[in-house]
Length: 231
Ligand code: CTP
Ligand code: CA
Image (cartoon, rainbow, N blue to C red):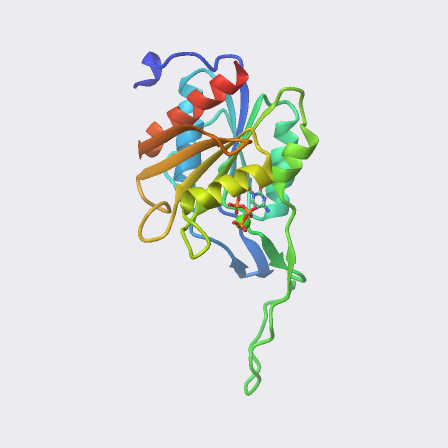
C-alpha cells in the first residue's frame, strides 16, 4: 500500500521503535557486535508512519536503507547503555515501544581509552564481560506510561532442547511483553534478507498472528496485532 492509501488506524499514537544492532566497545577502534542490519525495524517505523503514528526510531548502527526518512525523529546510538537511555527518554511519552534492535547481552567490563596493543610473544589477554541491562524487561517492569504496549522480538534457532516456537513460547512467558515477535534465524534466514517469517505471541505464549513475507508485510501484521491489543 502506498502511504496515502494506508488505513490511518494508528493516528495520534506515539510509537518508539528500536532498530539495528548494538556495538560494545573494547577500545577506540574495536567493538563486539552482531549481524542485525535494522531492516525489520526500519520497515516497522515506515509502516507505523504510513498508518498515521508519530514515530521515533532509536537507531543502533543501522545499515538498512531508508533510516533517514522512515521516522519523524531518529536518535542514533551505538552501545546498549546508550540504547537504553534513548529508548527510555522517548518511551516516557510513548503509547507503544517496539524493541526490534538486536541488543548485546554482555559488554566488555573495562573498555580502554588507548588502543589495545599486541605484545610480541605474549598471547591475547582474555576479554572480561559483564551483563548488560535487559531493556525490554525493564520496560515491562516499569511501564513508563499507563497503558503502554511493549513489544519484543526474539530471533531463535532450533536446537536439541526445542524448536524455534518452543523457545519463543518460553521467552514470551519469561519476558512478559504484551507481544513477542518470534522469527527463525540461521541457515540464511533473518539477518540481512528482504523477507521474514514471524509468529506473534502474547504474554501467555499464545499465538495471535503469523506473517511470512516482506519485512514491510511482517511489520503491518505486527501493527495489526498492536492495534488489537490496544482495543
Ligand atoms: N533485549 C533487550 N535488552 C537486552 C537483550 C535483549 O531489550 N539486554 C530485547 C531485544 O531487543 C528483544 C528481546 O529482548 O526484543 C529478546 O531478545 P533476545 O536476545 O531474544 O532475548 P534474551 O532474553 O536476551 O535471551 P537469549 O538468551 O535467547 O539471548
Ligand atoms: Ca540476547
